[in-house]
Length: 266
Image (cartoon, rainbow, N blue to C red):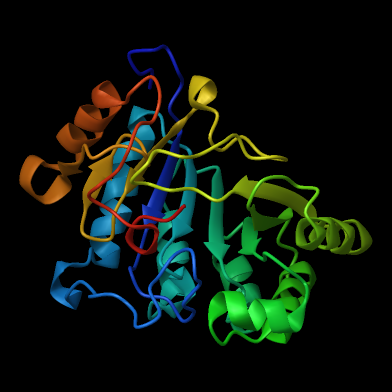
């Protein structure tokens, strides 16, 4: 698929839940947020159908996000269902890693190719403070389990304030070098002000070459993370929603006043 700016769109990011088992300071308020009712969340059958319709249109790369995707019941089955769609070449997941030790091998067996793990510091106390109670050892164990399961590459997403030369970011980089992981440094984004930057070590934030569409847990197809535009697959039908998002995809992201990171992914 080509959008109006001649960018090839082949990547669909699917947010499977707005729920998370951490309360990271830059993502959620301390007391949490109002969650969507379960009946409003796309079923796995609906998600598989979205993928089945999107692939003939040109989508061949799928990423599952959240919230935290591993907290959704039977997430392994969803990966298996997506892998069964002919034409899907790449399936990835973005996770905070807390539950990855349990799920890495089953996910790999189901057809997952690779994983991105969020890790902003390797200091246990700082991690606890940033995530409001997270246990960094569970993340380290999850990363090792992903390695043992053959998921590759394993990318580490590190949120930075200003640069990748910050002490925590430099420590994360060293950890990645030592353990054969790929480090990606992501400038802390703000949906309401439109603040974002190109990912250091990745392609995210590069509007000129953006190749992705997104879908929220409630079935809203979005052309851009930094846009309020969305197209409801349940009201419009999957193909029309995809086409609506494709041809509304802006040249450059602006602001998003309708969503939060916990319900659309980063």
